[in-house]
Length: 199
Image 1: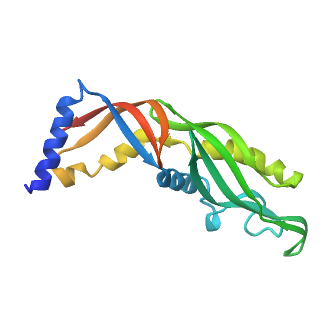
Image 2: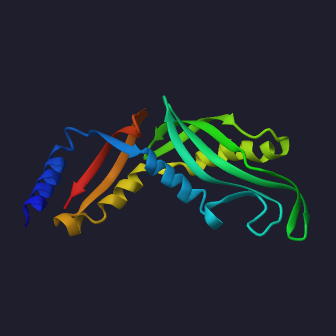
Image 3: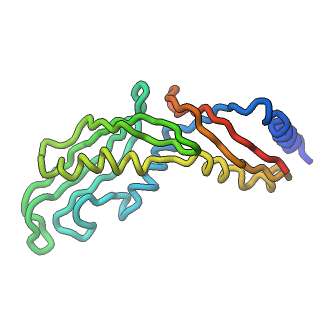
C-alpha cells in the first residue's frame, strides 16, 4: 500500500472511530456547483435553452438561457438571458418584436433533511413588456427555485462510490441531516450531522 493510500485509509478509520462522538461537520458547496446543477436540471433543452413559449422550431417563441449565479450577502442571485420573438407567425417568420432582456431573481437558501432548498424568491429585474413578464415572473419565482434544489447526501454518496478502488475500503454515507445553511465567500456552508460507515 502506498503512503498516500495509507494516509487516506488512516484518515477514514479515524473518521469512523470519531464519528459517534464528533458528528457535526461543515460541508461546502461552491457557487460553480450550484450553477452547474441549475443548468443541468433546468436548461437541458436544445442548445441549453428553456422554452417558456413555443419550441426551437416555432417562428415566435420565448426562451431563457445562460444562467449565472452570484452571492449577495445572505442570498443567491440568479441572472438569465431571455430572448423573445413575439408577434404573429407567418410561415417560418415571426412578424412582431424581438426582445432580449436580462432577468434576475434573488433566493434565500435553507436546509431540510438531506436537501438544500431555496425560497423567498424576489424578482429583481424583469422586462418592460407586460406579455413577456406574464411568462417570466412565474418562471423566475417558481421554476428556478424548484430546479435549483440539491440533494447534499446524494452528492456525497456519488463522490464516495469509488472509495474501494482508491483506498481499499468501502466508505458509505448512511444518513445526513442539514442543520443550517449560510453563504460564506464563494460557497454555501452547511452545518451537518452524518453517519459514515467504513468497511
